[in-house]
Structure formats: structure tokens, C-alpha cells
Length: 337
Image (cartoon, one colour):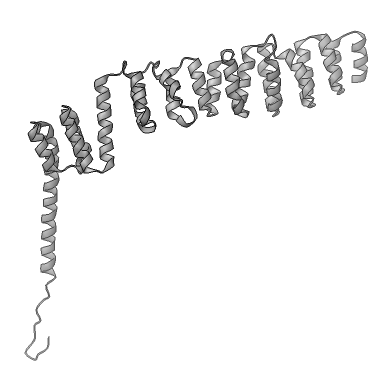
């Protein structure tokens, strides 16, 4: 008997119960007015949820602004909208709430998460303006799940997670790599192994800029390891080129620079491109026969294997010739076979 209840509650000024009766009657605007007089969070919630169910979203938003300022009520409010698929209306509500005097971190955080799922184009501006007011770990997780790599790097920067920022840039360079930003981050990382991963990344994707990176990293790099790193890359490049002349030039360069270990390593990296006589001459002239001996042992083994295969093939060929000779015809005394 909601009409009767409406009259009675209005008469005794019980505005909380009056608001409840009014929503049952579908009188949403009157219910909102009554909620103002009741000024109770529970009443605001009841009227808000009734307005959402009745798709009176403007009135629902008016009610929500009185609920959302209480951080412990935010989760239930968001769930109510999301459970019914009203994502646009929820984002509009949160956008309106950001200007409230009592706006808190939860509002900024939940709006960022919603943007990551439903309006990723609005995520960069939101983070640029309000990164200091969001729960960064929660938003980081949402950005990663939504594959928003540029936003992920931005948040790692603000959270001073430079190692993760660099790894993300190298894993998703198309979306997130920026030269100046990368050089700034790589200088701040804690894990020095990332220096060498960065060098490999530049060799693979930005070879023309590697000198700029080296200028940033040179005070922190182990120079011996760095030279070995580039020597290894040069050997790999020579091997993949399939160019014997390039492989021999690389050998000569290692000898000129006194890099005996690199000389020995390149003998195997470029093994099938090198001529044994050239290697023998270089090793003898530079007194490096000990470094070259494992290479010559391998060459000798392959040579002997080839000789053995040729011997076996020759023996098989002779046997087939012997078996294949026709048997002589024998005739009896009558002239028959």
C-alpha cells in the first residue's frame, strides 16, 4: 500500500521511508528530493539503485555523488552498474565525481581501470593529469591486461620501476619505445644485465642509434665484456652473411687487434666459410697454432670421414660391377643352351 505509506511518512516527516515508498511508486524525482532531506547513505543507495533499474541515469548520478565520496561504498556502487552492463553511465558518473571536494584515490583508480577496458583512447590523458592520485599497482595490472604498453611504461616511470619500463619498451617497441625516454630509463636501471640486452635490442632494431646509447652506458659498462659482446655479434653476422671473404677479413681484424680468443671462436662460428689453408697460414704467421689446433682437428676428422666414405663408395661400385657381369652361355652337344 505504497500510496498510503507515502501519505503517512510524509505526514510524520520520515523522509527515509518516504523515499523508499516513492521509488516503489516510480516517482523517482520525488524520491531524490526526499533523499536530500533524509541525508542518509543507505537512503541514497536505495534510491540510486532503483533509478538505475528504472534507467533514470541522470537521477541515479545525482544520488551516486552522495555515495561515491565514501571510499568503502565505492566497490558496491561500481559493481551495481557493471553487473547490469551500464559501463558508459558508470564512466560518466566517475568523471563527474572527480571534481568533488571529497574526491578520493578510489575514484581516479577505478575510472582509469574502466578506461583501460572500454575507452583506451582516454587513458593517456587521464594518467597524465591524475597519475599521482591513482593506485599505481592496480592501474599497472589493468594496463598490462589491456595491452596498453605506452601507458604501462608511463606508469612504471612514475612508480620508479625503470627495469620494467625498459623491458616493456624492448618487448613492445612499436607501441612504447621512445629514444630519449629509453636512454633516460636505461641509465637508472638496477639490473646491469639490461645494459647488454639494450645493446642487442639496438643492434636488432635501431643500429644507427647505437653510438648514442653507448655514450649513455659507457661509464657503467664492463668494457671487456662489451667488446666481446660486439665481437660475438660480428662473428654471427659474418656467419649469416655466407660470405667467405667477409669471414676471412674478420679473422684478420681479430689478429690485428690481438683478440686471440675471438680468433679461435670465429674459426667455429664461421667454420664452413673458411679455407683451411688460409687459417693455417694466419695461425702460423701469428704463432697461434695452439688456438687454431681444435679447428684443424675438426678439419682432419671431416677429411678422414670423407675419405672413408669415398673408399666405401668405391668398394660398393666395384662389387656392383662384379655382380653385374653376365654369366657365359653353355651349350650342350646338340647345340641347345
